Amino acid sequence: MPGSVRKAQIRQRVWERLTREGVALFPGAYGRTPRFRGQDRGIALLRDLPVWHAARRILVQPDLGLEQVRRQVLADGRTLIVPDLSRTEPGWILEVAPGEPLPAFGLGVPGRAAKETAAQHYLRGSATAPVDLLIVGAVAVDRRGTRIGRGLGSADLVYALGRDRGFVRPETPVVVLVHPLQFFDEHTDREPTDLPIDIVVTPAEVVAVQAVVMRPKGLHPRMITPERLGRFPGLRRILEREGIDLPPGVVPQG
Image 1 (cartoon, rainbow, N blue to C red):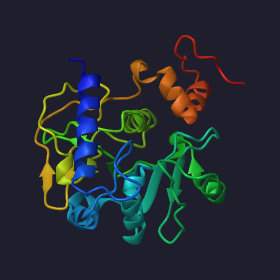
Image 2: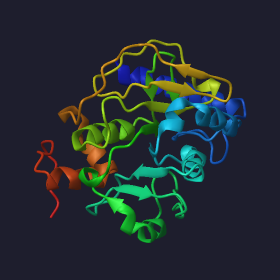
Image 3: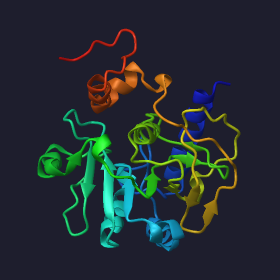
């Protein structure tokens, strides 16, 4: 069975499980990284981690389910970094210092008003200082650090772009916050472009992944697909500015 099909099946089962058990909070589980009951307890465990205490610059994906984590980063006096590949302007990395207002993120990306309010805080990837910790969303995860996202590849893209531009380092730890019902046991092959997880945090436990897995070293050509360029217009702009070839059949924008 192809890995993408297996991942889609696992993703669907997890969404169904979270919905059936009444764990997913508004606006529900399907199609997203879900908010879930007990998430505040998971964040408390996250804040106890040595990697959290050591971090001064924390990148958190813009998933709706990570809104509470983004607010906690600022409340704890850290600088918050949020990537936004929906932006077509030169800057696509939102940097928010402690004490500054956090723009409201909608279903995955900032709304127009939020973008305008925070426009002066957006940086190009090459102008972004290294981050100390990455927190990414997940629909499902296993105890070997295999992560299944929404199927869009946004976290993989951000990690690869960060490695290429130097704001993500090989040793930067990667963490996910999930509900125990989001664990899966089925075997699924990990692709070279998949982002492995170092630490899984739930409301009940912290799982430090022991498996040694090679991380992606940068943007791989197979990650640049017409579907992703349509979903993430900012990615197209980044590639065009840097002279990276677009896939066959994709017309450059003027």
